[in-house]
Amino acid sequence: MPRPLDPLPTARLNTRFGDASAETILAVALDRFDGEIAMVSSFGADSAVLLHMLAALDPSVPVLMLDTLMLFPETIAYQRDLSAHLGLTDVRRISPDTGAIEQADPNGDLNSRDSIACCDLRKVVPLRNALAPFTASISGRKRFQTGQRAAMRAFEVDTDGLIKVNPLAAWTPADIAAYLDRHALPRHPLVAKGYPSIGCAPCTTPVAEGEDSRSGRWRAETREECGIHITPDGRIERKAG
Ligand code: SF4
Image (cartoon, rainbow, N blue to C red; front, side, top):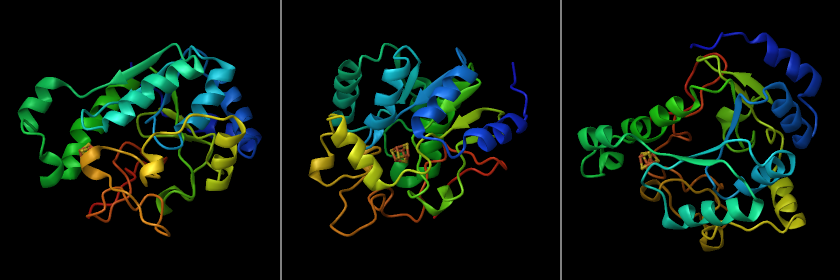
């Protein structure tokens, strides 16, 4: 059943809780959308922060991990180990349809020919399908990450009517590092190898000292996003090169 496109609930939630702590925003979202909400996590460099908060509030909330079948093996291992460490009980690995992959990317090289199409095939469509049963989703996006995220609110609604909750919108890199240290959370093994932002293996490179943390993503292109985030006014958050 299509979700109603009603931005008013997010406006009210932003007015009341937009400047609250991440833990409060998350708790409000879990209460407001009880049984209809899932967290989307890449199990990347910063993911342990929000997953840790979720585990403290309700470890049974579904966590959707998008496995594009192009991830680093370290990410798959980290997902398994971190989920067990935190006691998360409903982590769902979402993969693209094998028939669609065979048809559109049989050799696994679409990323080098048309990365936008590859992200649509391996990320956008599978995640949209996986989120269809839910009213709201939780993401770990932060305003500092890209210019496109600078105006992001704690509560948003996309063109499908899906409520998007961003508890860490106002967080800085220092906030994240402090939280990870304070709670002694396991780090993604590639962070120590120079990957501060981790996506698919073909499209992620290490970052040199002094570079922006996301400069290792789609390094050969000018875009910042994979297309899985849709802004409240309906624009897909990505820059085609
Ligand atoms: S990040 Fe790269 S490999 Fe992953 S889906 Fe997008 S283009 Fe394909």
